[in-house]
Length: 395
Image 1 (spheres, rainbow, N blue to C red):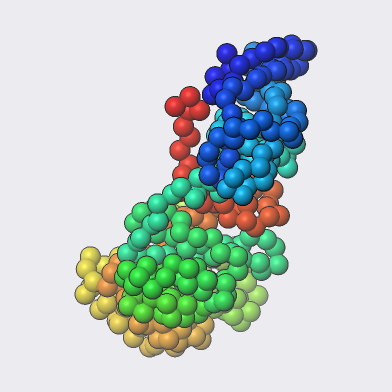
Image 2: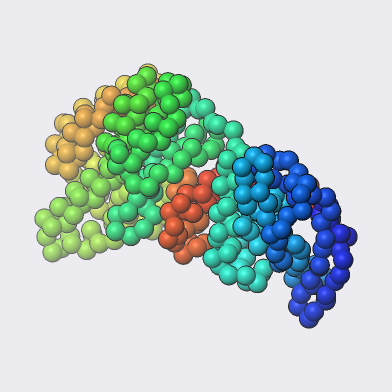
């Protein structure tokens, strides 16, 4: 009647909000360790009540006898039941249904829908993710990306290591220091690390030193999105300096121009364009910086690796001849990172996939208003990217 193996319904109690099935299980108790049947009559038994999938608008509960056995293999404990995990108070199909809802809804909404506590939802969801993760095949990528995410206020970070070609997350590490990331590569082993050909990342030193230590044959590429971010800060610093130098007559020209200087020209509106043109006509240094910014964009949009490398060399010479303080400071960083930037230009790789993860991770965090348990946050991120497909519980 209820579709559970070796179970017979002996009695049913229907109440206002719930249905209780009193069931009797056929056969002998089974040892969870060796799998053999326990033929002797167990002396230790107790009544167990667990929740099953709801039916007819009512919550359903199963009441049955659960035995404690002393098996010849040395196991002493409760018997194994195929449709019930050890120590759980819900059936496996109930947990599978709840898990499917948790892939698409917030834990709070699932708790309201199922009529249970949030802690129970989080516990069952966490256990289901860990179980599915253990069944996944090992990913052996040729290329990896490393990027950080902010998990809490107060400069508390996590590091996401991903495989862009496979569109999968390899690991979510608590922290962004070298000692936080190193255990991941140690666990993977020398053979796995030797397969890595390219690693794209930002200019954070801990990422670079850790990869160089464990993946010795890997080509490190710096992400140009982060480089553009550093350049934008340099231009903004120059804008602030020029604003302070401006006389009272031209002070108004500088107001509200921060994002106009940093925005791409094709994204400017007609009104914004006129304001920006006025600013650039007043200040020649900002005009030069704006031209250099467009030249920096063109470096990474070259049709071939050779053209991109030549554009970088010419752009660096242009910045040097401009002699603008903040831009010269940025140029010194470029020279320090030049080998890794040229690797990026040769292979035309970026951290686009890893950067796209950040937006999705923020949504995951907002759904729970922040996760206090980092392990649950880690599993939730892996779930949403690696095995998000929801299958029918009837399959």
